[in-house]
Image (tube, rainbow, N blue to C red; front, side, top):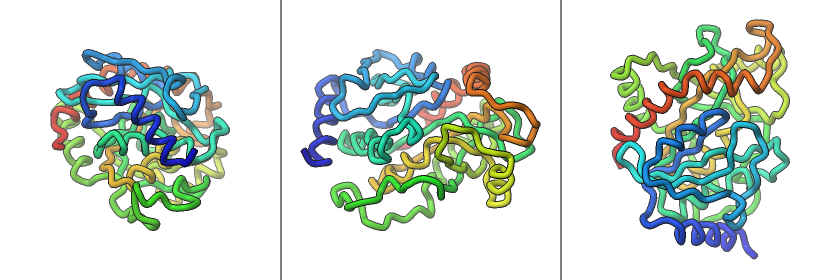
Amino acid sequence: MSDMEMYRNAADFISSRINEWPQIAIVLGSGLGPLANEVQQPVEIDYADIPGFPETTVMGHAGKLIYGMLGGKRVLAMKGRFHYYEGHDISKVVFHIRVFKLLGISNLLVTNAAGGINTSFRPGDLMLITDHISFFAPSPLRGKNLDEFGPRFPDMCNAYDPELIEMAAEVGKKRGLSLRKGIYAFTQGPMFETPAEIRALRIMGADAVGMSTVPEVITARHCGIRVLGISCITNMAAGILRQKLDHTEVIDTAKKVEKDFTGLVKDILKQWKL
């Protein structure tokens, strides 16, 4: 079976379970899955039932696709994502993005839990991603180009849509939230970064670091999908506060900002122009 046939099989299966085309796809990061509970008239699909979908094995990633209404938009929300460090081939890490494209989706909201590198950040901050750094894992576009999705050499100058960033910043301001803006660095994981690596990333201009998102964004832009990215700063990165890092801290901090995060996303969706 060809790659395109696998993507089409997955898209056809999802289409058979929902009654209208989704308008916006949402990928929910570690601990941020509870937003999916806000979806109205939900249709839940287990990843295990979707042809070609990988398995998610990480705490805080439930492994469900949720379709319904949120913020006045028809959304398709991933309650859990796939990571390179889980052992998936990079093409499987971004499998869902190409399926989204075949479902007619041209707008994507990606979220993640991230470690703060910028020393002015604090756990619980929400950061609008303005750009990313990714030198540390294979490109999701490696191999034969899939011309049905996009060009061999896609432009990444505006990987994160400037208009969506400014819209989200305005929404945050109206909600009384001091949203940060910054550059997200992608590392392979699953180990947390060393203090030396964090110092190097800070010199390179990174404000936050995590183990997801960037492969999805690269693939989305290859497909011509507009992207807005939001990081929840769940801890300070290695060496900044000299604390030992633990994934449970990531989940605990995400839970504390759940109310602000949920309200922000719902209002962003209301203002999102399609």
